[in-house]
Image (cartoon, rainbow, N blue to C red):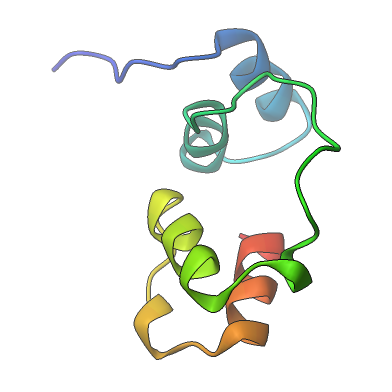
Amino acid sequence: MAKPRIKNEEQYEALLEKGYSKEKSARIANTPNAGKKGGKAKPYEQWTKSALYEQAKKVGITGRSKMDKAELIHALRNN
């Protein structure tokens, strides 16, 4: 079985060293903006529920369809 492709190997390795699981490290390193400098995105509280749902979908959060906005924010920050 082939090893899953990681878009940002450097970020993936750094996350592993911080103690993140392989799955979570891969999910973060494979996001579309992986490795780009942050700080330009609005805080989650300013996002629409729909945008939060789509972000949760991108990172593979389960149960997202039953979550309200606050729960989506919590899941995104703690997943």
